[in-house]
Amino acid sequence: MKSLILASSLLAITAGLAFGQSPTGYNKVTETTLNGPIRYVLAAASPDGTVGVHLEIKTPTGLVRVSLGPALFIASNNYYFFADEQVSVVGAKTASGEIWARTVSKDGKTFLTLRDEDGTPRWQRATEDDPDGCGVSHAPIR
Image (cartoon, rainbow, N blue to C red):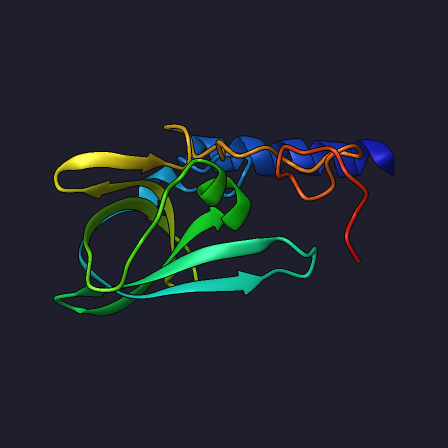
């Protein structure tokens, strides 16, 4: 049974890679560029306790929700966003219509790189010593 599950998992990953999707779920095939002013900067907590930063961008076709990444990654690197600020976002569209940002540009310059070319996140992933992926070893906050 374990062999079947492992084979199925490997097949799914291989199929995803063949169609431009990384093992992280970032689908390069759906990558797009959005340009426009930021309407809102939102913080949302996920079930694991990580706080994520999202932007709502005004585009000619309507509002688009953009998922950036963990707030601690963005803040620890002195990145910031303001309402009405003009940005350009390169990211992959998800099934829900949200964009997973790979890069964010301001004033024609790449301001923030969130993911590598293949969609792998640049922030640290949670480990036993770093339960929230913030880069600091501490006990989980409950």
